[in-house]
Amino acid sequence: MILSILVTRKKGSRLEKTTAILIGIAVFFVLFTWVYERFSFGESSIYMRGMFLIPLGSAALFGIRAHWLVGTWGRRLWLFSAAVFVSGCLIKGIIEVSGRSTDVEQLYWIAGSILLIGSMLIGLYEKRKQNKD
Amino acid sequence: MYILNKEKREYMANNWKKYGCAAAFSIALMSANVYTLLKAFVLSEEIQVVQATNTSSTTEKAKSASTVSSATTQAVITENSYSDENIQITIEEVRQQNTTVYIANIQLSSPEYLKTALAKNTYGTNVTALTSTTASANQAIFAVNGDYYGANSKGYVIKQGVLYRETKRGSSYEDLVVYSDGSLDVIQESSVSAQELLNSGVVHTFAFGPTLVKDGEIAVSTSDEVGRAMADNPRTAIGIIDSLHYIVVVSDGRTSQSEGLTLYELAQLMKSKGATLAYNLDGGGSSTMYFNGRVVNNPTTNGTIKERAVSDIVYIGY
Image (cartoon, rainbow over all chains, first blue to last red; front, side, top):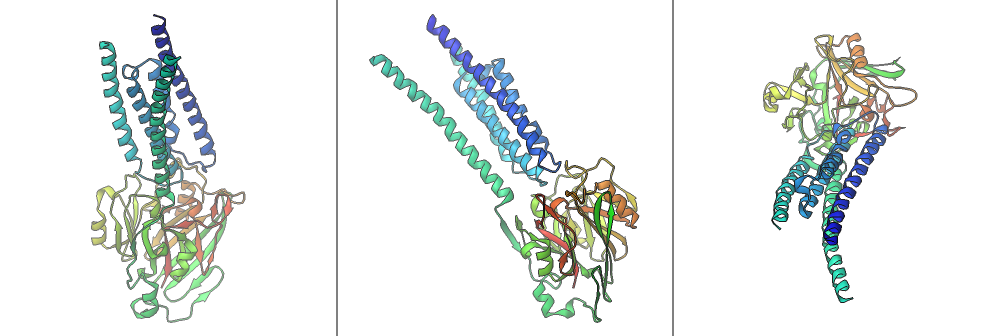
């Protein structure tokens, strides 16, 4: 009984910790974008400016304990996909702020989407397995 | 004790898997990011060397002067002007909007003297050279930076009648095209292919923009800007007044002496000088005007007065 409560509490605190870290990362991205654009002669990128929405959105999903995020691999793949999307936004943003145009970020969107779908599928599988147990 | 040690061992084994997985992923992602940025900014890829033609090769130019009409009379050269029977260029330096602006008025007897050149005579990614270096290598009398095609992965590239890239760019801006008779026009890449442009007699394309003046009227609004750049910037623009009569403008900017121009101010200037069609080329640190062996303006790179290496130039010469 106590162990199950501890396990529950531990899992809950892990999600809360992850949520807090993601919010912190979102705030960091906002500050980073602000500082970066101060040295860019006014150039800006919608990708760099919107980068903070990815960890913020993830934090919201962790906060409401979305179904597929309760399992280890569901959660892990979700965070991996978020990292890939953030990298894509950052790369695209850096290149756009330099005055160039590119489509090298396409691979990031593809990889991130694959990880995202994998996260949902595996996460739902883990959730179902947990319910059966 | 034994149970605790086993639990401890299991705990460490599970955590190692967890952190090892995250560490491996992080290393892979960081490596991919570093490689992508290097590929975008540093790693050069030479795709095609400019083939020697009658109008593009300096070697050919030296060997067969008869294939490109050259002046038979001595050129009259001053600090701000050049004049021979085929080419007349006058450079005017003015101050407006707290900015030093250099205006080149160019009159040619033939369109063959309006040329483009690639850095290091090579088409590729991150293949760049200073405008003055490329101009000097091509014995240019006058030159400015082009559209910096190398900074983008898409957009038509036609230089000296050779097609280098026919991938359409997804931009609402028009391209500037130069025909073999020296006339200028603007086109949308979505409405015509690069091969069709070649077939219709286009010898040069510039994929930057926007169009500043069209049919003698200003074609940009006060809120237009290239990408999302701030309003005041160093600028380079080219326009046509009438047949074989061109105007090229370069402005300084990003310094305490010169703020720079907005696109609208640039368009106003072009219109005031009589341009019927004017087009914005690559600006910012790229803006460079070369005339009679020296850089005329003050190109700014990272806050210092220094030329930026660019991928192509447009120039006047034999």
